[in-house]
Amino acid sequence: MSDIDELLENQLKDKDFAKAWEDTELEYQIKRMLIAARIEQKMTQKELAEKSGVRQSNISRIEKGACTPTLNTLKELAKGLGKQLRIELV
Image 1 (cartoon, rainbow, N blue to C red):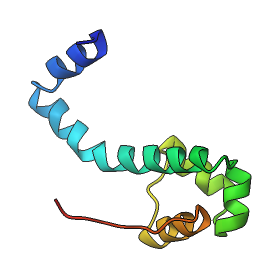
Image 2 (cartoon, helix red, strand yellow):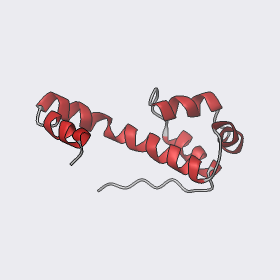
Image 3 (cartoon, one colour):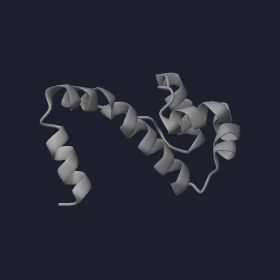
């Protein structure tokens, strides 16, 4: 186990930290998936903006975690990436 994993494991024992971590996990996953899909397509933020109709500044803010995209924005970004948006309850 890496030092980071060990630190996170210890921090997650704290009830307040664990709740904060859980509350932000979805936003973190969204930005990671968006960045990974854009890189996979070898696109810049500007290129994705042109293909999706979502402003490059908004894409940047989403990828930085500075804002949470709407479902419609995610749908447009997925379309610009040549993908479909799929949401699941697990």
